[in-house]
Image 1 (cartoon, rainbow, N blue to C red):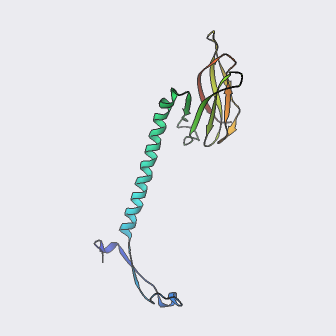
Image 2 (image 1 turned 45 degrees about the horizontal axis):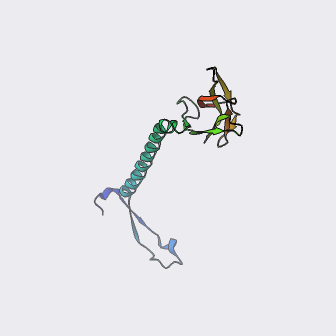
Length: 155
């Protein structure tokens, strides 16, 4: 018996179940359930650590990418899609229009972009509603600049 005697289960293979095979007719197989529980615990801890690291990366990412002209959108916790992730990237059109494209890993969403004219007037443009992994792109008018953007969920 092992160090944890009560946690070791013995199984015996019946002679009839091994007919026609070269293995012995009867043998004893020890299964240490404590070791199995330890392995399951290690796997669970590894998965939890990975989730924490990835969650931390999403927390840091918005400020880290803000200077690069791209954006990462986080969803509100009350949303049905609270576990979804979205990414954004600034784009320039062929005539010089400024825009932003967004794509998410689940749900239905669209890009919402706030623009500003040279005179300081602010307005909002909307990209098309799309489903997961498709891109939604919104554009400012020619000569205007982007002052903010986000992904809108729903409908």
